[in-house]
Image (cartoon, rainbow, N blue to C red; front, side):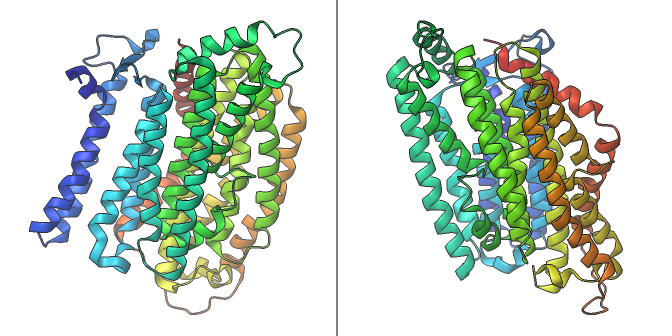
Length: 506
């Protein structure tokens, strides 16, 4: 490993150093405030390194000119697509850690281990979005999933233990499907490098492009791609690979549920874009797999939204909500078809913008739920009655996030859906846009029902709900992001557009 490689990995290395430092410090220092301050200071370092890499400092290249920097024997890529997701993941980690400080007293003896596992899982996700090679991708995926399984089960209750086991088993099954698909692709192409796979697949399908009736032009590629989609489908919680989501979301600690709902989804879609743009974006294959994602998108939107209507637990409602939103995001993937076409870039950028907006929105919802449940001790929707009078600010933030999830202006959720729907319509998929629009109308019922309960129902008790300053700060930041980027989304749209251009540089 060269000095350049270490520099390219500096955000991840600094996070690993932080995770190890807080564990070691906790052994010798009993003052928890010192450790918490170290976590806050330590999260600044990966941001600084990422900013330097974004500006090309020390790389000898101009990123605006479309330069990608490869490292670790060409298995790692650093470009603005990668770095945008690293910023997003670090931001998600920071919000989750802040919201956890008022929650981790429930498992006091393993508080520091909880934070270190969050950091290690984030490192796995950051590696996941950087990889350009299948073996590295799989290793990064496992680094993401194993700490997550421990985090889900960390309270040690019956529900959390059951959720952790379910996640671990189903994660292993999905990883097996994914690696089996990778094996098929490797066997056909003789390489695990995404760029070389693209070239080999083009040669395999080129001779059959005009006459073959075999999907994907080759049965082996067909099987490999379907298995990989199945493996990734679990990571992004899409139908029909969603069966784990409600139980795991309900059983896991609420900050972990928030982290799983946004960080895992962001990393999952980022790697899908990287793999399918990098390896399977020729004219024969792109139209095939885009239709698979279209079917999954419709199923996710319909099943997620309709089943959410019957939920009485807020965490389960948000679980089915995240399944539905996986469907909305996949609408952008359906127009990622045809290498170098304008509307394919539009689809990819709409996916990236949606992920950023969804992260801010869902984090605001979960932080508000944490603040309310810390006082009420309940996640039942009926117990949210009268929250508008007991805590006007928290109720406003939760209402804003639910309005954004519905897709009502002037929120970032509205702009995200508008971008995805527009890209799908420009790609000729008007029927998919219609399905998404109708699904959004259905979702308004259960989102607005929660708002009605908070503001129109009488409170169960008249004691005010107060949150600690850090939780209020996290709520303020995420809620401001919902409104500000809903009114003025241009910076995020430009950043997403610049980022996805690097997917086509090979």
